Structure formats: C-alpha cells, structure tokens
Length: 280
Picture (cartoon, rainbow, N blue to C red):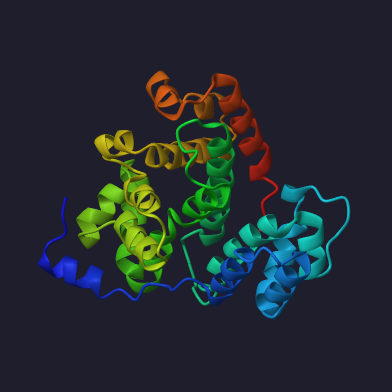
C-alpha cells in the first residue's frame, strides 16, 4: 500500500537521523592505509559517552575477551580496527536516541535484535556465494539499521506507533502491515530513507526497505534475501527456538544465497548462543 497524500507529507517531514559524526571520521580513517589501531581508538575516545557504551558492549560476554578492555585504544588493539568500528557504529546509533522514553516499548530488545541481525548478516555474508560484492562491514551496517525506522517512528509518532505495536501483538499481524493502516507508511520505508541519507549502496537501501517483503523484491536481490533471512533467524534465536530458526532457510532461499545447510546451521547456533550475551 502506498501512503496517501497526508501520510506522504508526514513521511517527508520526518527529521531523519544523520550518520553519526564519529562514524564519518572513522570511515575516513579506515580508508587511509597509514592509519593504525592507535588512531582508530583515539578517534572513538574523543567522545566520552560513546566510549563508555563501546566499552560496555566490548566487555560483554558476546565478545568473549580474555582480558577486560579499559579504553578505546585498548579495545582497538585487542579487537582490531574493523571490529571496533562495528561496535562504535552500534554504540553511536543507539546514542542518538538515548533521550527516548520508550514506556511500553522494549527499546533494549530492539537494539539487541539489531545487533544480532547485524552479526548474523555479516556471518551469513561470509559463507554466501551470492553477496561477495558486499563487504562484511556493509552487511553489518545494513543489519544494524534494518529496523531503525521503528525508533524514528517512536520518536516522532509515539502514540500512533505504540498503537500499531499493540494491535500487531494482539491481532497476531505483522507490525509493518499495521503501521501502514495506522500511519500510512511503515518503519521499513522510514528506514530506507535513513539509508539513503547515509549514502548506503542502493542494494543496502533495498534490503532495509524490503526486508519484510513483498516476496518478489526479496527474490530479486540476494542482499535483500540475506537480511530478510538474518532477521527471521534472529527472531527465532531470541526465542531459543533452534528448530524454528533452522526452518527459516528453505531450498529456494538456500539456492538463491548459495548457502550450505551446514554453514547455516552453524550461523543458527552462533545466533542462539549470542543472544543472551549481547549488552546495549
């Protein structure tokens, strides 16, 4: 369903979050072959609240570090530049919405889900033969932001969004479907606009917009299919439903993504094990 004129105006008037400035700085540093772990850690350390969240995430059981990291520079040395960048991305995105009072909405659950989808999309991308043109960092990013539209709706249309959440749960219907009924547009559409503003590649914008379907859009682009799969797998993993998580990969999707059953089973077990260890 396309939004009506009033809904379209509301959608176009939403104040979208910008790419966190620290990420623009980190991206520029990562592109410089002469930059090392010390410079990456120092860039993160310039933002004290960000550093605190980065250290909380890095020291969580999800990363299984043998030693506790005490500074951004230390984290960069122990985890490596690219892993610190992904943690900083998650921390900086969450930090933009610290002012929100979610009330009945479990915002922490959404952030944990986003991180799990990001990790799962990256893991699946490494063993999929169909998305080799995308880097692990790009797959992590699209997984992280795939549901960011929900947070923006909570911020700008709190009452209507919470009504959509309530009706979705009570009626057993998808949140996206109810959002369109209540608001005239969905969190996926909002998320795609954020992805465009952040200048993510077109395939990643499509993955954010169509990770709930329609099916023809999922089947048309492997990365959309991968994010859809990572999203559904993460939902089942969070519930501890291993059989349900395994069942999210059918023969058609396995063929499209060039995924083996054994690789996917490993990703499922990693996701189930990771869920309880992720901290935000």
